[in-house]
Picture 1 (cartoon, one colour):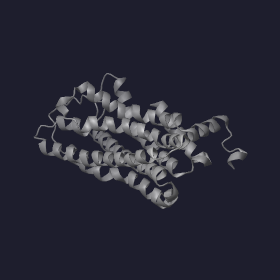
Picture 2: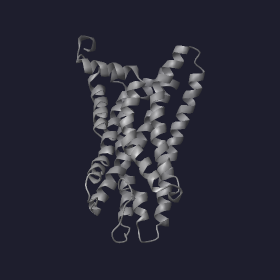
Picture 3: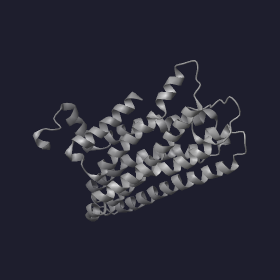
Picture 4: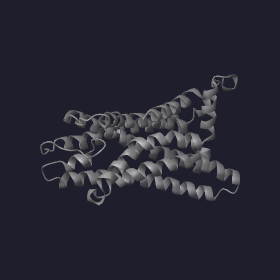
Length: 281
Protein backbone atom coordinates (compact mmCIF):
# COMPACT_ATOMS: atom_id res chain seq x y z
CA UNK A 1 0.00 0.00 0.00
CA UNK A 2 2.84 2.39 0.87
CA UNK A 3 4.65 1.56 -2.39
CA UNK A 4 1.39 2.23 -4.23
CA UNK A 5 1.10 5.69 -2.67
CA UNK A 6 4.76 6.50 -3.35
CA UNK A 7 4.75 5.23 -6.94
CA UNK A 8 1.58 7.01 -8.03
CA UNK A 9 2.52 10.19 -6.16
CA UNK A 10 5.83 10.16 -8.06
CA UNK A 11 3.90 9.90 -11.35
CA UNK A 12 1.80 12.94 -10.41
CA UNK A 13 4.88 14.95 -9.40
CA UNK A 14 6.73 14.06 -12.60
CA UNK A 15 3.75 15.11 -14.71
CA UNK A 16 3.59 18.44 -12.89
CA UNK A 17 7.30 19.27 -12.60
CA UNK A 18 8.83 18.09 -15.87
CA UNK A 19 7.91 20.33 -18.87
CA UNK A 20 8.56 17.40 -21.22
CA UNK A 21 5.54 15.64 -19.74
CA UNK A 22 3.17 18.58 -20.25
CA UNK A 23 1.47 16.89 -23.20
CA UNK A 24 -1.90 15.19 -23.67
CA UNK A 25 -0.86 11.61 -22.96
CA UNK A 26 0.76 12.49 -19.63
CA UNK A 27 -2.15 14.74 -18.74
CA UNK A 28 -4.39 11.66 -18.74
CA UNK A 29 -1.73 9.67 -16.93
CA UNK A 30 -1.59 12.30 -14.19
CA UNK A 31 -5.36 11.80 -13.78
CA UNK A 32 -5.01 8.01 -13.64
CA UNK A 33 -2.58 8.04 -10.71
CA UNK A 34 -4.97 9.81 -8.28
CA UNK A 35 -7.64 7.22 -9.12
CA UNK A 36 -5.18 4.45 -8.28
CA UNK A 37 -4.34 6.09 -4.96
CA UNK A 38 -7.95 6.75 -3.95
CA UNK A 39 -9.23 3.38 -5.17
CA UNK A 40 -6.62 1.44 -3.20
CA UNK A 41 -7.14 3.67 -0.16
CA UNK A 42 -10.83 2.73 -0.14
CA UNK A 43 -9.85 -0.93 0.40
CA UNK A 44 -6.31 -1.42 1.73
CA UNK A 45 -6.38 0.44 5.12
CA UNK A 46 -9.52 -1.35 6.34
CA UNK A 47 -8.12 -4.65 5.07
CA UNK A 48 -4.84 -4.11 6.95
CA UNK A 49 -6.73 -3.22 10.14
CA UNK A 50 -8.89 -6.35 9.89
CA UNK A 51 -5.87 -8.57 9.29
CA UNK A 52 -4.11 -7.31 12.42
CA UNK A 53 -6.86 -7.68 15.01
CA UNK A 54 -8.90 -10.55 16.39
CA UNK A 55 -12.21 -8.72 16.12
CA UNK A 56 -12.72 -8.45 12.37
CA UNK A 57 -16.22 -6.99 12.54
CA UNK A 58 -17.18 -3.95 10.50
CA UNK A 59 -20.21 -1.72 10.98
CA UNK A 60 -22.89 -1.81 8.31
CA UNK A 61 -22.50 1.94 7.84
CA UNK A 62 -18.76 1.54 7.31
CA UNK A 63 -19.40 -1.28 4.86
CA UNK A 64 -21.87 0.88 2.91
CA UNK A 65 -19.40 3.77 2.82
CA UNK A 66 -16.62 1.51 1.54
CA UNK A 67 -18.99 0.08 -1.06
CA UNK A 68 -19.88 3.53 -2.39
CA UNK A 69 -16.31 4.88 -2.43
CA UNK A 70 -14.91 1.79 -4.17
CA UNK A 71 -17.65 1.91 -6.79
CA UNK A 72 -17.35 5.67 -7.17
CA UNK A 73 -13.61 5.47 -7.87
CA UNK A 74 -13.46 2.19 -9.82
CA UNK A 75 -15.77 3.22 -12.65
CA UNK A 76 -13.89 6.44 -13.58
CA UNK A 77 -10.66 4.47 -14.02
CA UNK A 78 -12.40 2.28 -16.60
CA UNK A 79 -13.51 5.40 -18.49
CA UNK A 80 -10.08 7.02 -18.29
CA UNK A 81 -8.37 3.93 -19.73
CA UNK A 82 -10.79 4.06 -22.68
CA UNK A 83 -10.02 7.77 -23.14
CA UNK A 84 -6.29 7.01 -23.12
CA UNK A 85 -6.83 4.36 -25.81
CA UNK A 86 -8.52 7.00 -27.99
CA UNK A 87 -5.57 9.32 -27.34
CA UNK A 88 -3.19 6.59 -28.59
CA UNK A 89 -5.37 6.10 -31.66
CA UNK A 90 -5.29 9.82 -32.46
CA UNK A 91 -1.52 10.00 -31.95
CA UNK A 92 -0.72 6.99 -34.16
CA UNK A 93 -3.48 7.04 -36.78
CA UNK A 94 -3.99 10.81 -37.12
CA UNK A 95 -0.56 12.30 -36.31
CA UNK A 96 -0.99 15.41 -38.46
CA UNK A 97 -4.38 16.19 -36.93
CA UNK A 98 -3.51 15.06 -33.39
CA UNK A 99 -3.24 18.52 -31.83
CA UNK A 100 -6.50 19.56 -33.51
CA UNK A 101 -8.34 16.43 -32.33
CA UNK A 102 -6.94 16.31 -28.79
CA UNK A 103 -7.15 20.03 -28.06
CA UNK A 104 -6.91 21.14 -24.40
CA UNK A 105 -10.64 21.78 -23.97
CA UNK A 106 -11.52 18.28 -25.19
CA UNK A 107 -8.86 16.70 -22.95
CA UNK A 108 -10.21 18.58 -19.94
CA UNK A 109 -13.77 17.59 -20.80
CA UNK A 110 -12.82 13.92 -21.20
CA UNK A 111 -10.94 13.92 -17.90
CA UNK A 112 -13.87 15.65 -16.18
CA UNK A 113 -16.27 13.08 -17.65
CA UNK A 114 -14.11 10.31 -16.24
CA UNK A 115 -14.12 11.89 -12.77
CA UNK A 116 -17.92 12.25 -12.83
CA UNK A 117 -18.76 8.95 -14.55
CA UNK A 118 -18.88 6.86 -11.39
CA UNK A 119 -21.33 9.14 -9.60
CA UNK A 120 -24.56 7.90 -11.21
CA UNK A 121 -23.66 4.19 -11.41
CA UNK A 122 -22.39 4.07 -7.83
CA UNK A 123 -25.50 5.81 -6.47
CA UNK A 124 -27.88 3.46 -8.30
CA UNK A 125 -26.08 0.19 -7.56
CA UNK A 126 -25.22 1.06 -3.97
CA UNK A 127 -28.72 2.31 -3.12
CA UNK A 128 -30.23 -0.92 -4.47
CA UNK A 129 -27.72 -3.07 -2.59
CA UNK A 130 -27.90 -1.44 0.85
CA UNK A 131 -31.71 -1.72 0.84
CA UNK A 132 -31.53 -5.53 0.75
CA UNK A 133 -32.38 -7.15 4.12
CA UNK A 134 -29.55 -9.24 5.55
CA UNK A 135 -29.91 -12.41 7.62
CA UNK A 136 -28.65 -11.70 11.14
CA UNK A 137 -24.89 -11.71 11.76
CA UNK A 138 -23.31 -11.94 8.34
CA UNK A 139 -19.85 -13.17 7.43
CA UNK A 140 -18.63 -11.27 4.41
CA UNK A 141 -15.99 -13.75 3.22
CA UNK A 142 -14.29 -11.15 1.03
CA UNK A 143 -11.53 -8.55 1.28
CA UNK A 144 -13.93 -5.57 1.04
CA UNK A 145 -17.62 -4.72 0.77
CA UNK A 146 -18.67 -5.18 -2.85
CA UNK A 147 -22.03 -5.48 -4.57
CA UNK A 148 -21.85 -9.19 -5.63
CA UNK A 149 -20.70 -10.21 -2.15
CA UNK A 150 -23.44 -8.30 -0.31
CA UNK A 151 -26.11 -9.64 -2.67
CA UNK A 152 -25.21 -13.17 -1.59
CA UNK A 153 -25.98 -12.26 2.03
CA UNK A 154 -29.50 -11.03 1.31
CA UNK A 155 -32.53 -12.88 2.72
CA UNK A 156 -34.75 -12.15 -0.28
CA UNK A 157 -34.83 -13.11 -3.93
CA UNK A 158 -32.05 -11.18 -5.67
CA UNK A 159 -32.56 -12.31 -9.27
CA UNK A 160 -33.70 -8.86 -10.42
CA UNK A 161 -30.81 -6.95 -8.85
CA UNK A 162 -28.33 -9.56 -10.12
CA UNK A 163 -29.75 -9.06 -13.62
CA UNK A 164 -29.38 -5.28 -13.24
CA UNK A 165 -25.79 -5.71 -12.05
CA UNK A 166 -24.98 -7.96 -15.01
CA UNK A 167 -26.50 -5.53 -17.52
CA UNK A 168 -24.62 -2.62 -15.94
CA UNK A 169 -21.39 -4.64 -16.05
CA UNK A 170 -21.92 -5.43 -19.72
CA UNK A 171 -22.65 -1.81 -20.59
CA UNK A 172 -19.86 -0.24 -18.54
CA UNK A 173 -17.21 -2.90 -19.15
CA UNK A 174 -17.80 -4.64 -22.47
CA UNK A 175 -18.71 -1.44 -24.32
CA UNK A 176 -15.56 0.28 -23.07
CA UNK A 177 -13.43 -2.77 -23.85
CA UNK A 178 -14.94 -2.84 -27.36
CA UNK A 179 -13.99 0.81 -27.87
CA UNK A 180 -10.47 0.09 -26.65
CA UNK A 181 -10.14 -2.96 -28.92
CA UNK A 182 -11.44 -0.94 -31.89
CA UNK A 183 -8.87 1.78 -31.17
CA UNK A 184 -6.04 -0.73 -31.02
CA UNK A 185 -7.32 -2.46 -34.14
CA UNK A 186 -6.92 0.81 -36.08
CA UNK A 187 -3.56 1.36 -34.37
CA UNK A 188 -2.36 -2.09 -35.48
CA UNK A 189 -3.37 -1.40 -39.08
CA UNK A 190 -1.60 1.95 -38.96
CA UNK A 191 1.58 0.41 -37.51
CA UNK A 192 1.61 -2.33 -40.16
CA UNK A 193 1.52 0.40 -42.79
CA UNK A 194 4.68 2.05 -41.39
CA UNK A 195 7.71 0.94 -43.39
CA UNK A 196 10.53 2.14 -41.14
CA UNK A 197 11.69 0.14 -38.11
CA UNK A 198 12.08 3.38 -36.15
CA UNK A 199 8.42 4.21 -36.81
CA UNK A 200 7.36 0.77 -35.61
CA UNK A 201 9.38 1.17 -32.43
CA UNK A 202 8.03 4.66 -31.73
CA UNK A 203 4.40 3.62 -32.21
CA UNK A 204 4.89 0.48 -30.13
CA UNK A 205 6.58 2.39 -27.33
CA UNK A 206 3.81 5.00 -27.33
CA UNK A 207 0.94 2.58 -26.71
CA UNK A 208 2.37 -0.69 -25.36
CA UNK A 209 2.42 0.48 -21.73
CA UNK A 210 -1.22 1.49 -21.86
CA UNK A 211 -2.19 -1.80 -23.52
CA UNK A 212 -0.52 -3.81 -20.74
CA UNK A 213 -2.37 -1.78 -18.07
CA UNK A 214 -5.69 -2.27 -19.91
CA UNK A 215 -5.22 -6.03 -20.16
CA UNK A 216 -4.38 -6.40 -16.46
CA UNK A 217 -7.12 -4.10 -15.16
CA UNK A 218 -9.98 -5.10 -17.44
CA UNK A 219 -9.03 -8.80 -17.40
CA UNK A 220 -9.43 -9.05 -13.63
CA UNK A 221 -12.55 -6.83 -13.57
CA UNK A 222 -14.31 -8.90 -16.25
CA UNK A 223 -13.36 -12.14 -14.47
CA UNK A 224 -14.89 -10.80 -11.25
CA UNK A 225 -18.13 -9.25 -12.53
CA UNK A 226 -19.09 -11.15 -15.69
CA UNK A 227 -18.34 -14.67 -14.51
CA UNK A 228 -21.19 -16.50 -12.73
CA UNK A 229 -20.62 -16.29 -8.98
CA UNK A 230 -21.11 -20.04 -8.48
CA UNK A 231 -18.39 -20.88 -11.01
CA UNK A 232 -15.52 -19.48 -8.91
CA UNK A 233 -14.37 -20.30 -5.41
CA UNK A 234 -14.33 -17.80 -2.55
CA UNK A 235 -10.53 -17.74 -2.58
CA UNK A 236 -10.50 -17.01 -6.31
CA UNK A 237 -12.77 -14.02 -5.73
CA UNK A 238 -10.51 -12.73 -2.95
CA UNK A 239 -7.37 -13.10 -5.05
CA UNK A 240 -8.84 -11.40 -8.14
CA UNK A 241 -10.27 -8.55 -6.04
CA UNK A 242 -6.94 -8.05 -4.29
CA UNK A 243 -5.24 -7.96 -7.68
CA UNK A 244 -7.35 -5.20 -9.25
CA UNK A 245 -7.73 -3.12 -6.06
CA UNK A 246 -4.14 -3.24 -4.76
CA UNK A 247 -1.71 -4.98 -7.13
CA UNK A 248 -2.77 -3.35 -10.41
CA UNK A 249 -2.57 0.25 -9.06
CA UNK A 250 0.91 -0.63 -7.77
CA UNK A 251 2.00 -2.00 -11.15
CA UNK A 252 0.71 0.94 -13.21
CA UNK A 253 3.50 3.44 -12.37
CA UNK A 254 6.10 0.68 -12.76
CA UNK A 255 4.78 -0.28 -16.20
CA UNK A 256 4.66 3.32 -17.45
CA UNK A 257 8.11 4.05 -16.02
CA UNK A 258 9.85 0.96 -17.40
CA UNK A 259 8.29 1.23 -20.87
CA UNK A 260 8.61 4.97 -21.44
CA UNK A 261 11.83 6.92 -22.00
CA UNK A 262 10.26 10.30 -21.20
CA UNK A 263 8.99 9.10 -17.82
CA UNK A 264 12.32 7.45 -16.98
CA UNK A 265 14.12 10.66 -17.90
CA UNK A 266 11.76 12.73 -15.73
CA UNK A 267 12.28 10.33 -12.82
CA UNK A 268 16.06 10.56 -13.13
CA UNK A 269 15.82 14.37 -13.24
CA UNK A 270 13.73 14.46 -10.06
CA UNK A 271 16.05 12.04 -8.27
CA UNK A 272 19.08 14.10 -9.23
CA UNK A 273 17.30 17.30 -8.24
CA UNK A 274 17.79 19.05 -11.59
CA UNK A 275 14.22 19.01 -12.89
CA UNK A 276 14.32 22.82 -12.66
CA UNK A 277 17.73 23.00 -14.29
CA UNK A 278 18.56 25.35 -17.18
CA UNK A 279 17.69 22.76 -19.78
CA UNK A 280 14.08 22.70 -18.56
CA UNK A 281 13.58 26.46 -18.18
